[in-house]
Image (tube, rainbow, N blue to C red; front, top):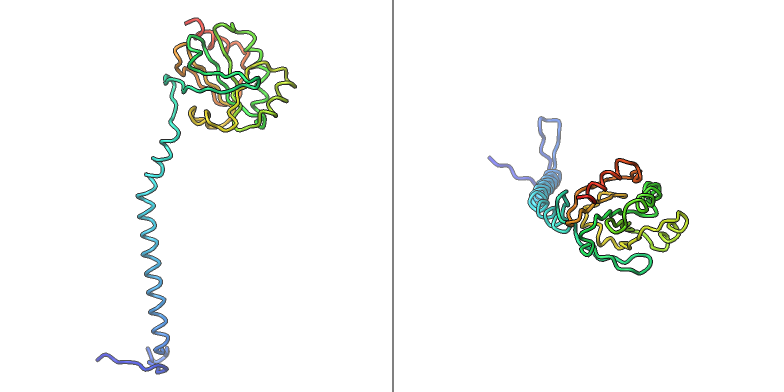
Length: 207
């Protein structure tokens, strides 16, 4: 037979644990809250499970992954002297594209060897473009004057071109062949006037 309780009345469990009606009511409220929280957590996991792939897919659409053999993404950027450089207009020449910044110590370290490579290779068949990424052109001006750099410094301070080249950090260097295809990619700094790098680039110049 179901027994009812009045407020304040006590029922004895095992003759040692008195339980009031209010305590039973409070326990029921806590159990209900705990159940609701569990349901909310489960719903959150379900929503996250289905929505995360969509989010990743949407992000992936903004930045394509660039592979060797792909056409190099075209761009038009202005250098520190005000000249506009358009990559597609340089077809028929080998193009060395280096992304760098003045706040990047490895970038600064490799600049002198880039300058030497720039002066060694034939200007009518080879172009070197140093693209300033997420940095101030005023700072770049100071650096190139201090180091005697004559390489064209292109302004990508707003990071418009960088994402098209799937940058993972700085410096990163890309070699574009005469047909406008990406044929070499180097992550990190290098001693660009070393014989092995000269040979790599001359191979594409002579093709």
